Length: 338
Image 1 (cartoon, rainbow, N blue to C red):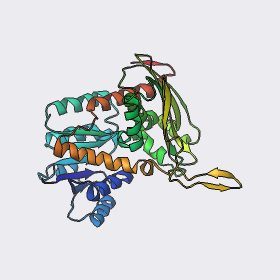
Image 2: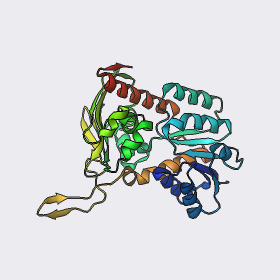
Image 3: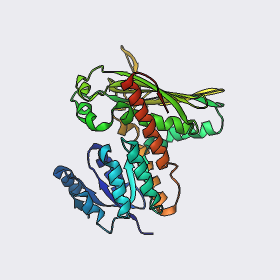
Image 4: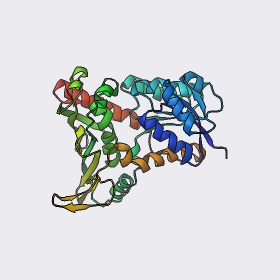
């Protein structure tokens, strides 16, 4: 079987990690092209991957008939239009989360995909491919904690004093849609996709005052009430001192399970006059490095063997819908009915 020829679009900090996986670690895939309007990013790709076609313009990449699939690691504001353009060009699509910052754009993508049902579109909710989260999902499905009724989950990034998050904020969609969208998707997945009924949220600026200009926050808490009485309580932060700290707890009628309670980088523990400690994961990529690889492998297997990834565009739309509602609940200072 011929390998899936992939063209990656966007070669920033995460795009480069995806490119390295596709080039060297995903059986059945060949990284055949890279696209970026940034000359330095194209030079990085040219120096690291042999026999790679390089494009500064997305439309030119789409016109390359040898490319089977595009891999979008681009600003969220571009996701919807780039997915639709790829479908029209006859390309399969992997796109980093979230699907869009706008529900109408989500619907436009779903409608475009319906016109091209032979093409695959996958949105990158990477935690579903993490071994620990998968084990938790399987355990819940087997009833190990009884009937799950509450999820407590957080996405907390290490503080960046250089101001990356402030520069990124105007195009991110805000803290809840950028960070909590992962936890929203996890909560729905782990609880069996219940329908959301109401969202409340609050937040603050603890450190990064520059976020105030675009109405964003660096710490926020949200609660989702589902129509069957189940709950999800979510926390997001840009200001952790110790490193990236993703963790989730699921509480059921017969027990509870947790994932990532200690954000340890490895199994080394240090005991000294200050007590016991361990090194923490510095960024989300170190925490989910294996999951990003499994995610890429799952997408390629879905193309070559027809194996479902378990992720749908409806899942991505619902996560976006709830994330937008959470942002609106914070801005309005009151609950948002769904």
